[in-house]
Length: 280
Image (tube, rainbow, N blue to C red; front, top):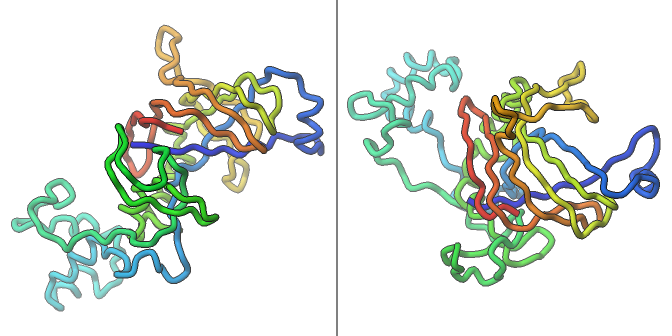
């Protein structure tokens, strides 16, 4: 799995602009960030032109379409029982009532509708613009960025872009981001060291950690800036994560060199420790 990381650097305080603060700040300083949301780059047009066959229907709709009119009325309480509350019933639509989320091979649903549009957010991960195979990637069709940059590699978007839950205001990522914010589980910290100029610096080090604290929130549930978080360590004091990449800052935007990074992830009641391969 490849991931691109782009962080916009903006650090100012006490009424000072970022530029003025950067001029007076000492060299070799450290910047710290907390990841508030984890969202997939999904490009959307107003009339869903990227999905000419429409969006995929949900498991819930597959279920109630298989029912008789009377069964549908009874099991959904004439449509007043919410999708969430009938989820446990809807997923048990195997031949003998099996859970199709656990055993999807027991049923045959229509093929997944995927993105067919030419445009996507993202960056050129494999270094070519023609989509040809590389030592680490199969041949594939590249996208063009909204600003016209060719060679964009975002095959995750091709797969999930026509699934409503992954799109803007879709429940999958809204729910996952909210769960992280209220639980503090798998909170990712980013540390940037050796920063001489926060606007332009061609040699910095970017390290990734997990916090053991919850998010510091204001009275409206917004993440408070300039808060402190403790790094997760084992009983011997060794950092559990802590992978680092070399990076650079250009016009206030941080990018890193390619490398493997292990990150904690929590959302939708799932906890993982994925290794992001060739992360940029």
